[in-house]
Amino acid sequence: MNPADTLTFSVEKEHNRIRIQREYAAPRQLVWAAWTTADLLDQWWAPAPWRSHTKSMDFTEGGSRIYAMRGPGGEVHWGRTDYESIHPQESFSGQDGFSDENGELNSDLPQSSWVNTFTERGESNTLLTVETTYPSARDLEATLEMGFREGFTACLDQLEALLKESYR
Image (cartoon, rainbow, N blue to C red):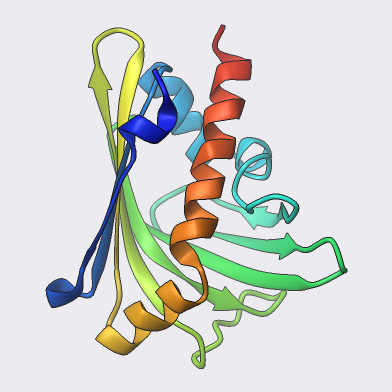
């Protein structure tokens, strides 16, 4: 299976939402772990040559993750995800935004609501659906202009490589 063939990326401007689906040749438990375990997230979350580093993570309802994306020239962009609902192995939702190193959100940059769903496809495939919704059309457009499509697609490619390495 060619991962590029399983990716759909749609922008739903009328709902200020981006919807992404990608199928992985890996069991749901493994794909879930890659999204919910700091050590695994750090291996794929930032598009190369950038690297992700988790400062803190509490994957519980009401918990959060504070992380940095570090560039090859020493650039650092901080982010925070606040987890709202968690249905183990099935879905989780939360709020995500740019922040400082202490997790204080930067209100000058777009923030979004995320819903991630993990659907079994047979015994060893998983369909990942990511819906990210923005409070305004302006925030959606700003996110797209910052290269979200290209960056997130690169991250999902890295996730594919990690899953292949982990599930042989």
